[in-house]
Structure formats: structure tokens, C-alpha cells
Length: 479
Image (cartoon, rainbow, N blue to C red; front, side, top):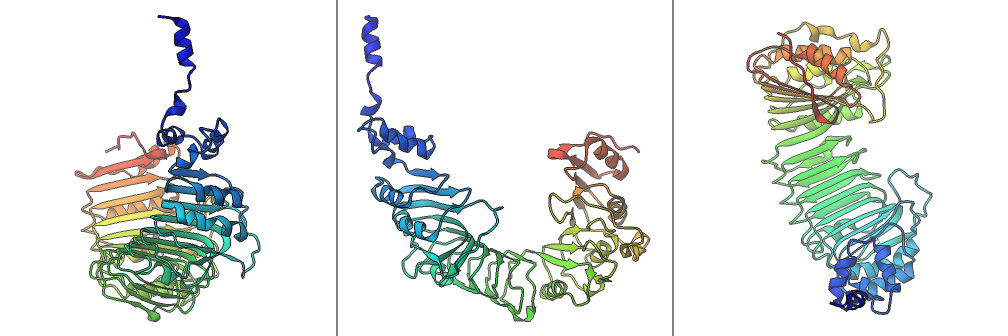
């Protein structure tokens, strides 16, 4: 064999003789800008990248060149992402290439202008870009840093199953665009941190999941969705809301920090509803507090529910406030109670005890000891705080004979927490399983100490203690 011949053969450019679709598969793992640069290799490679089915840009391309490149692309795009982490888009540049994108995308389209933590800039309320109809896209995600976005007045989003819009100013009739028949396949809808949307009327035969969060100036909602199973309304409908919801197959309803007079909220028959939450109640405040009134009015609408997520919130300074728990005088019949307590260092025993007295038939309790924010460090309440003025829970009897499982989450080990957990174990006389997950700030040694403090040797009770990264606390309780 001639070694020189082998070397000559090895120097041949056999790669360039492959079909375009094979070369595109070779380029696929490369970052899109690098794949585009291969067009400089030779004339043969000039247009190979145009056969890539997925394009991801972490900057905003030059609008006119990007429009022309999309128009010349040789294949439908199953994924097109344009994400500028530092922002920089404006409605004029987006208007140049968005129609070309709509014509080429047959899968997912993602458009993000800046990261979520950036401060919003002043914008012109009359300046907006039209979102064209994407006839073949299956999913659309758009974040525009409060740029204006107007939905196309005509056209059918024939294959769209998921729409996610956030941080935009909306113009036009969004409800018409996403209702049947213009959106005949839509299954999931998420809108958050939007402006300009005062009301939404959606009539969909296919919608399964709908999430609305922080819709500013939003006050009217109409939903007719026979297949809808999950509905979440968070930080919306704050003042004099008007809502009519027809969702006979609804299984989960989230109504969090959405207050106002509930008499104007019409809920149709929901025979399959299993989960209700996360209703917010402030333990201390002024009488007839807006959120509390809405919470109580909402709870009164349901007699039986499988799972209730209830939030008990404590303000940081409460000495000038009144104790409001007596305003909560009814709860539905429950199987599972998920109680989320944001105590801000206060003694929460009285409020949690008040809730448990109204649902003694529960079989499972999830007690989540939350913080107002992830970065906040809890501080104990000052001496003489009025949170200690209702100590009856420490001595009054309570039998939770149906309670078989308790899950405690984010336990930090304060005196208030430990005292309540010990009483809780006394009330649950037929307990079978306890799972305690400590807060990430709890060290292994502290977790072992708390484990020993809270453990009890009742036959048949399985106790599982977990600390950072779900590590099991290796500790044998003492008899």
C-alpha cells in the first residue's frame, strides 16, 4: 500500500460532497452564529445553514438581513429563538422580520427582549408592533420588556397549542385571536405582567390550562371552555372585578391575591373540581381587609373540596393591627390541607390552630413555612409583640383522628415553629407518616438536633427528616 496515496486520499474534501440535509445535521450541534459562518468556507457551504431546522440567536440580528435570510431559508423551522439578554429591540426593527418568521416557523417560536430583572424603560403607549398570524407554529413564547404588541386582526393560528405572553403592552382583541375558530388547537395559555388588557373574553373548545398573573388594569374576565381543567388567576381582578367562568371539567382553581367583591364573580357548575387555592388571608390588619373579605367569600362558595391551599400571612409590624382570624368562620370539608404560613418571625400557633379547628376531618396536612422572599432572613418579633396574645392553642385540646400524614416544609427550627409542631403531633393521635424538610439554611448538625427534639417513638409512625439537597438526616431517635 502506498502511504503517499493514503495521505492524498485523506486530503480529499469528501465532506462537501454530502447532500445538504446531511451537512445540515452536522452543523446542527453548533451555535447558530457559528453555523452561519460556515458559509464563508467555500461556495459549496454558502447556503448549507439554510437547511438547519432550528435556529437560536442570543442577540437581535440586523433586521433587514435577518428578514431576507428567513425568507430564503430552505426548510420549515421547527424551532426559532431570538433572545437578547440585554434587550435592545424596538417595535420598528421587530416589524421588519416578524412576518418572515411567521411564514417559516412550523414549531416553536421564542422571542425574548432582555432578562426578567432589568428595569423597564419609558415607552410610547402608541408605539406597538403587530404580531402576525403564525399559521403553522405549535408554540409561541414572547417577552417584550413592555414593548407594545398588537395581535393580528385576521388569520388562523391553525396548529398553535401553547401561547405564553409576558412583559408586554397588549393592543387589540386578544380574546378573539385565541378563541375558536381562529385558534382551533390551543391547549395552554399563559399571560403575565401585561398592560393594556382591561378585559379578556375567550371561548375555546380545546383549552385545557390557563394562567393569568399580574395583569395590570385588568378587571373583566369571561371564560367559556368546556375542556378547561386548570385555571390560575393571580394578582388580577383587584378592583370591582367582573368574571364569568364556565368550565364544567375544571379540576384545579387557583385564585391568589385576586380580591374585590366576589358577588360579581360568577362560577358555573364545577362538579369535578378537586383543588382550590391559594387563597390569601392576613392574620393581622384592619377589619374587613380587602383580601380577607375576598378569601372568606370565596371559601363560602364551596362545601366539599379535596385539596385546599390556604395562605396565612403576617405583616412585619403588627402591634397597631387587629387580630382578624375570627373573620374566617367556615371552611369546606377537606381531605388535604396545604397551609402556607408566612409568619415574618411571629408566633403563628393561634392562627394555624384556628384553621385546624375547622377541618378536623383532614387526612393529610402540608405545613409550608414560607418566607416573603427567598433572600430574606427571618427576624424574631420584638418582646411584647401582640402575636402572643392568643395562647389558648398551647393548652386547648384538639383531636385530628383522621390525620394520617403530615408534611412539614422549610422548617428553620425557631422556638415558635418547634412549639407548634410538637402540639401538632399531640393532636394527630393516629398519625402514620411524618416528613420534615428543613430550610436550606439549616446545617446538618442543626438538623440532627431538631430531629432529636421532634422525634417520638410511637409504634407504626414512619418519620423522615431531610435537610439541604434532600439529604436524609442520619439520626436514630431516642426512646
